[in-house]
Image (cartoon, rainbow, N blue to C red):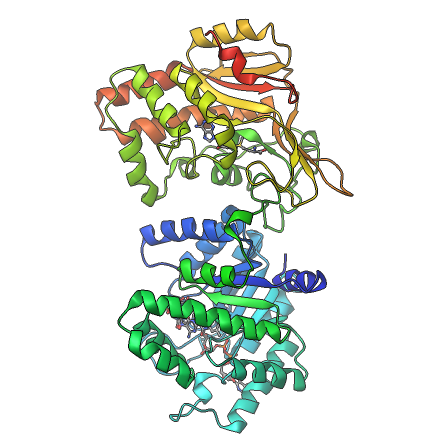
Amino acid sequence: MKVIDKIRAASADRNRVVFSFEFFPPKTEDGVDNLFERMDRMVAHNPSFCDITWGAGGTTADLTLEIANKMQNIICVETMMHLTCTNMPVDKIDHALETIKSNGIQNVLALRGDPPHGQEKFVQAEGGFACARDLVEHIRSKYGDYFGITIAGYPEAHPDVIGSDGLAPVEGYQNDLAYLKSKVDAGADLIVTQLFYDTDIFLKFVSDCRQIGITCPIVPGIMPINNYKGFIRMTGFCKTKIPAEIMAALEPIKDNEEAVKAYGIHLGTEMCKKIMAHGIKTVHLYTLNMEKSALAILTSLGLIEESKISRSLPWRRPTNVFRVKEDVRPIFWANRPKSYISRTIGWDQYPHGRWSDSGNPSYGALTDYQFMRPRARDKKLIEEWAVPLRSVEDIYERFRLFCLGKLRTNPWSELDGLQPESKIINEQLEKINTKGFLTINSQPAVNGEKSDCPTVGWGGPNGYVYQKAYLEFFCSKEKLDALVEKSKARPSLTYMAVNKEGIAKSNVGPTDVNAVTWGVFPAKEIIQPTIVDPVSFNVWKDEAFEIWSRAWASLYPEADASRKLVEQVGGSYFLVSLVDNDYINGDLFGVFGDI
Ligand SMILES: Cc1cc2nc3c(=O)[nH]c(=O)nc-3n(C[C@H](O)[C@H](O)[C@H](O)COP(=O)(O)OP(=O)(O)OC[C@H]3O[C@@H](n4cnc5c(N)ncnc54)[C@H](O)[C@@H]3O)c2cc1C
Ligand SMILES: NC(=O)c1ccc[n+]([C@@H]2O[C@H](COP(=O)([O-])OP(=O)(O)OC[C@H]3O[C@@H](n4cnc5c(N)ncnc54)[C@H](O)[C@@H]3O)[C@@H](O)[C@H]2O)c1
Ligand SMILES: C[S@@+](CC[C@H](N)C(=O)[O-])C[C@H]1O[C@@H](n2cnc3c(N)ncnc32)[C@H](O)[C@@H]1O
């Protein structure tokens, strides 16, 4: 969706305030991994968009494109990619735009760019554009209305116009404004401003823009002060005016980083309050890839609340323009959303409400990507899972500890630990893992809980949510046989089981689709976001078995005895998916009672 449409919708919805986060491409691979984990946490607070910068002179082009793709499709946040003209002939510009378009991204921040490192003046690339307005014109003429186009605005005028006294001559400021209007007239629909610390200057700028007929939203760019030296460097570079009272407040605490941060949060909050009091309901935060100050400012403003992170679906709703209609997913990849998205990236049609509408979905092939762990998690996974294993009971112990919350990582999960809903059943999970039913997925039964309940709620307020109890685990053939025998006396149970070779047992039909999570909301059809189905189970099973070797056994050296044990268990156990369809009086764990 275009950011401008989100901002307009928020303004129509009781003038709701929206906020956004800016990030830049980190310099190392570990940095990139860490950034995604951080973004994931920040996106849970529902920013209207996040943007990623385009390294000076196009130095980070490939990385920016890759990060933008992951932000939109895996983190699932509305993504705006910065794009500059520096060193970019038109074919390179088009390559970048075609790439993000095919990845379902609809938002671009169109910029001229700074001169490349070490150079003083911006130089137009051969066959490239001279300024941001040319780029805006090009995007509109070639891509029509597909992209939402944002441009940069400078409340104190562009630094090129600012003199050595730190001020822009009136004429320079006016020319800059007139040029800004020409960028809007060329097709831009949103302005994000350069950072500033004098709110009066920003408010005057907005008023000046309105006077010359700029009507689009103007989003204030706020950079929380994180450390004194960085602040001085950035404001010097951008020629930003620092009000005397800010300098006076910083001077005595400049060597105390914590005090500077706290002041930065206080100042950012006060600036936003003042801006918002003037009717501006958007805030753009230059996060500098840091989480604390940006979130603290939003918390102080009452725009976010840790305890009220709400989910519109039990899994993160896609933002990719091609998959926004998607509202049903099989449960199997619930703990591996990145893998699910990568395996379904080619789908051009998403089921709407009824899973069977999608027919027989062709999942993408299993690739190395599915087994790649973010480096930062690698260390933790090795520490928690590559421990000496003498018997199968030692294997059981890993699963048991994970279900008790004593391990953070799990080879079958891309997520950190368990979800809050698992607390309801973690004692039962512990018991069955101790018996050798090695769980990798679960959900408790829910019969009409309020939809804003912090543990199992989703979909916003005023609705009711429901779930069938679900378990997915590996177990030996003997244990599976015992379970199948016992389940005969429990008609509410349905199961599917399969081993690595594909030998299968099940009491459901080959195309039966079982909705295991649904919600009832005012003035809406029933929403049923999560299903269990044999077709997807059959695809998932290959990934689930590969994880034994590619994500766990591979953590040990080649000939290690523990490695062999892991391979052997993974190679001989069955993968079982078990649903208790009686979500009112069922007792899913009861069937394990005397096995
Ligand atoms: C929100 C924001 C994000 C940014 N992100 C990035 C980024 O990711 N990567 C990056 O490299 N840089 C980024 N920049 C920095 C930006 O590239 C520089 O500030 C650059 O010097 C100007 O870019 P612009 O798009 O504002 O340029 P333009 O809008 O083209 O303007 C540049 C200057 O030229 C003047 N000008 C141009 N044409 C005319 C004309 N015909 N008549 C009169 N005056 C004219 C303007 O008035 C202005 O002073 C960002 C800046 C902002 C505010
Ligand atoms: N608002 C801006 O003017 C702005 C914003 C982003 C990037 N940039 C410029 O883009 C180029 C590439 O930046 P990068 O992201 O690759 O890495 P970088 O290391 O130069 O900057 C890191 C981050 O700092 C922030 N930043 C840098 N310069 C800024 C500025 N003048 N004003 C506000 N924030 C600024 C941005 O969030 C940026 O992503 C640099 O020349 C940078 O100055 C400018
Ligand atoms: C089935 S989903 C939950 C989905 C959600 N209830 C829905 O309706 O779509 C994933 C659940 O599996 C749980 N889980 C993750 N790893 C697990 C494991 N190893 N054993 C048991 N449960 C696990 C998570 O805590 C989470 O509750």
